[in-house]
Length: 214
Image 1 (cartoon, helix red, strand yellow):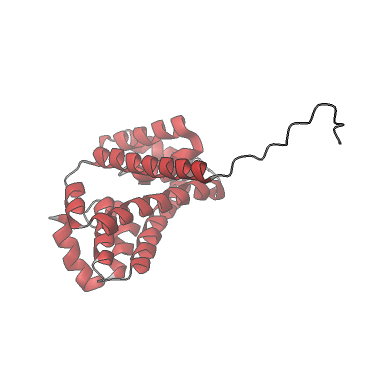
Image 2 (cartoon, one colour; image 1 turned 90 degrees about the horizontal axis):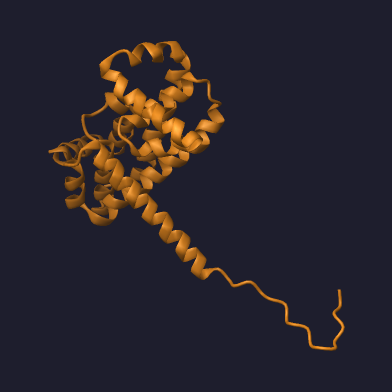
């Protein structure tokens, strides 16, 4: 079981495990990133590790991963990408990343964080296409922050049972769940902000016969 393995490793390596697991991306532990982040929330809720410390290491790990993916794409260039597309092992992920980029533009750098495997392919394509790093970072790092808040928050608030449930989902179901949760959260924030906003102050209607001052 993913969560059992993680708990044993957490006892040995503590905060560093979260950073390395996410920073190494597909070359790290064979555990979904979502499960790792949620297990971090569970661990923090139990008082085993400091919540802020766990959050920072998870956030920093995924931040490192997408940055290295961008740098790798920038280094290998578009010619190598075209060669990789000819191999069935990479073709599906690259095409899916291209589809997201074509559909959402810059926003794809943030949205791709919620799609397993594609979260690494999109930064590679961005780097290969010589996208400015500053523009990439603004969107991608925002997506990483939201992703960390969603999954770490779920583990912190709902515990081990939910982490075990998520471990049993396939990658695209994970992406759908994350998108729904993130959308619900921001909709809630928007509606709440709209309700608390002060109504506009209207000027009193002029009295008939009274001169209106400029």
